Length: 357
Image (tube, rainbow, N blue to C red; front, side, top):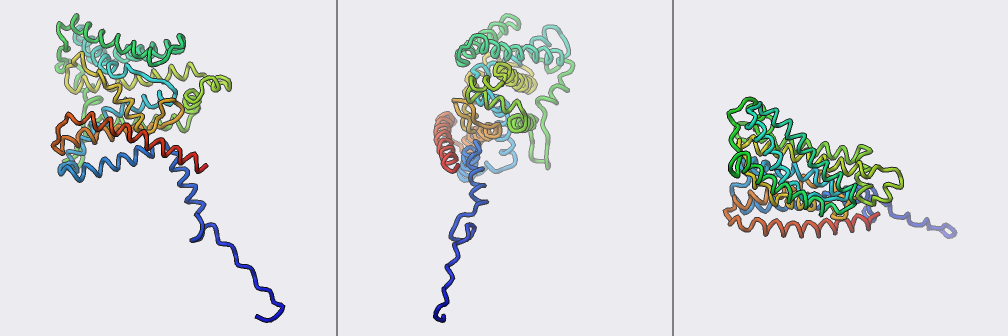
């Protein structure tokens, strides 16, 4: 270098070079961390790998079909329960409402010797009436949804047993499997598809995935989805900007009732008879699946896809314990542990997401 020639300053490192973070990657990480279902997806992968290692038969096509079926029976209800929780409410009557739906279909068809589709239609109206009652009581009385739906749970539990004994003379309904319309109704609610000669996919899996897709579209692509998030985040603030909070919450309860009707018809047309005491306790499983999927108990946050993944975790755990030849008595212990771990993981993911904003 000659005298009087200044050296050029070193160029600063490029932000996307080896010494700096990649903006695109940071944005992708931020978007990923913001998804409510991230923790559930990580948990599902961990559960899948775990049982794949400890249970030799877990990865067989027939076993995976059984896992998907178990997950779908939970997921059909977990998805609308998740939407309800995002809207800031609970429903403790969902488990027995499923049974009520099946009982109405069965007893109406059998006692009136009508085509089973008549019973299915009446059951739809009655079940939607239960959902309307829950929603209407909530907006009219301003009582917590916990109290209202607990009352509905107790009333339906007694009604299911008392009405079944009064009409059928026992704790179970009479079989309707030989009645007109049963084959076509069974095809819609309880059939199965055989793929590749080995994999049997129950129709409930299609209902589950379809409901998840519909609920996701409603949440992310419609005005009603914005209303659900707003009503769950702050009902007073939502009302102040014109959100029809009362109508939104009633609609959410009707959505829960609709899915309870679907689940109830599957229960009926799978076995042809219904035990009046079924469903008690399932409401907690639906709520737990939604929480594992990223829904907050305080409302305003969550996703339908996360609830579906939470149901998948339940299905893998329940069937995985059987395939691993463990004592099934440990099932509830594993579910409780997963609920706590998933809640902690979801809270950590949310904190990281907020820190990267």
